Image 1 (cartoon, rainbow, N blue to C red):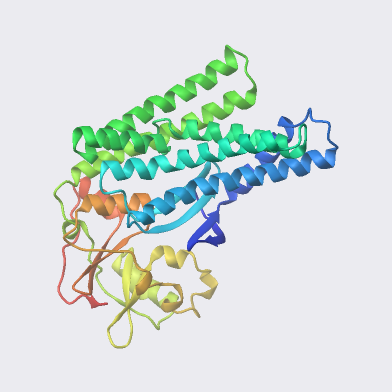
Image 2 (image 1 turned 180 degrees about the horizontal axis):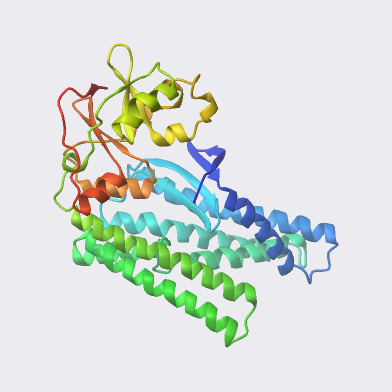
Length: 378
């Protein structure tokens, strides 16, 4: 999804948007204006209604994602935030549901909320003044939300229907990894079908370019996401019965928190070839973790002034996991939360970190580092 920036905090949940959302909002406003072009409104009214209707549409998407987040919290799952982007929204949660039934509820509440909004809009349109702007907008939002509810129930990643299907297959097979593989393959079929529909709609049925191209684009996205889920399920299968401790990387050294970023780069990262290193204070206590990506996010002209403590991730914000937990669970967290790494902590001490590179090396036959004594205390 790319970079994002926060626009609000709702019920303790950060809501962010990506640059692609801004482009899509402009596109949707143009599309909505086309939808209402036959209404007897002035140009100013038409575009004002288009902007308001688009904002209300994305508000509906936000409610959809908040429903997922609230249910996740009710199930004891931490919610890291909601991001609105090109294809709607996504809730970033710390882990998956612990049972098929809970997963079905967590996935199904989103489309259900869209359906409820759609029905409420239709009911509101019935009591609104006939042929008014309010009635027109409510009818539009009713159709769109019902369509979103139906569309999201398609069994293709990353749509909610894929999670509902996964829950059903998990219940049937009693194996979440196998269920992921089956559900992902169904998603590949759905994605390919949407692409084929877009081609047929454009070439054979002569539907509008918007319908055909949009269907093909969504199909391509679903196909890519589903193929990624297939690869993920294979990787998780390779990590069956493997602990985090076997896959993690042990940092070869720790970085003092009061040295400059330039010194950290030249004296630690370059000679050690490390991706991430723990950061210690004068007393040897862990204060955070710094990675090459943190250096990359800092203007190189400031490396001679900014200190490691200015760019690191503080220890209280480190995503952590235990060395005895399944490596497949770590991989799943890295994928679903988009975390760069997980700090491996045992008895209050940092003993390593695990990231996707280390997992890929392990799956492909690499030899990750093993735990070492004398790790930093948290």
